[in-house]
Image 1: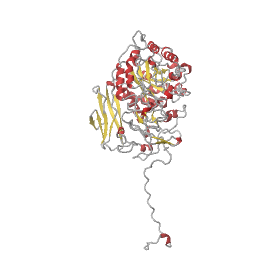
Image 2: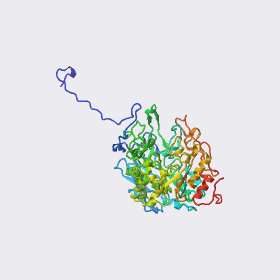
Image 3: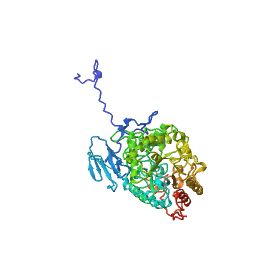
Image 4: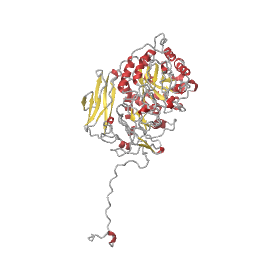
Length: 637
């Protein structure tokens, strides 16, 4: 009691302790001060998994009405989904479709729409009566809604027209890699590819991929952005899903198979995402905004942990790896680790290659999602695919993915299907190919795991390895590094490849046994190496049967000043909107040119070497076809 209201400090005796002022609960953290950036989720020791606590960082995508939202984000801030297609049997004439959806609020009731018919169950069955791509969406009782990519069923792709030649049902032949060719130009080229005698054409990554309106290392939309996925939607730089479907159907009708370039080891690089706030303390606190994508009319949301300093509006936490249109969340990625050793299996598998966000392919969900993507590729009409950066996916994980793909395709791989794994070799060839018992092996160790998983001998031959030892040391790309013991049927060979073209690249050491055309190789030397590929490839003992799949790169020259874009019109500096002073671009050039004789030259010009009359003649002789001149093959001479 203190009726006179005398301050406690003037009253004799002990004063009562006042009740402490309540401390308000901490609010969500705001942007980091100064030039700090988040440093969570970096691997410690042999750790490779992202800690389970980081699942709380998910759902970073803004909702409608929030800052940075755009219509192409749909309701990915609270709902994600994808289509899981399983064919009933290997004839691929009927299939079940399951929409695998996750809502942020698990109490939300979901409704599924298949081709205009709504239902509360997430599965429906279809057969050849479904003659158009299936439109699918999912809606929540809270008003959320997603429209997914249309589903293409394999039965709607035309059968590959039979042609004269030793094609062996699609298991022998030459595949042209049309680097940087838009889908429409590939479609226009397919008539000549068919009459020249090529088995097929490989296109470059067709999924939604990284794009930007600001130069990256002075280049506007460099070619390697194609290898940074934003989602598995078939909405790539080279054309839309509709463009792709039209091209594939045209080529198959002409007898030309089409092969994809599948990027499934990683997603986009750290800091190359939809977040509008990035900064780099190591570069004077330089700031930059968001990247976009190849999706027309907007881009899918995508987030990484790198170079970030803000928090999610609703999570109050730093962003982590999140690609909702796949969908992948934080736990679907390995924790961040630099890849600094090429002989350490842990780093090869879990390291972030050049800063690319590395998928945790050990996870069941990741394997299922990759298998569903591969199933979509087969559904739209691809006959197979190259797997980029395959040596950074643990062999056991690849077996798991292929096992799930085989299940999705009715229990067997299609008879004309093949795939080839990019396994670049250097000093680690012993581990990766030669010694099957190494524990991280894509040779006999890998094939033994495929056999144990139920793959037949013929199916194992369909899962091939790209031979990076060819042409100098072809045995290095062969199982157990022993051509006499293992043969050459499970390997794909090629002279120059697109990765080698990069200035400073040392991905393959061909020395005098091969050459890279656009790095100053004389035309005639390059032509001779391509002819050797078909007439007398190093390591062959029976040219008629050895190396049944051989690929020819038809590329383009870099632009003026060494610009590393693509002459498709999307590397033109006219598209630049930010920091454009140092932009190096490449103007549009038409890829398809029916008057080309091959070996076309010039800054940003397509090479079209696959049209060279001498190369075509060598390829046709290998395939048991007639002389191109006497057969009326449209090769310009």
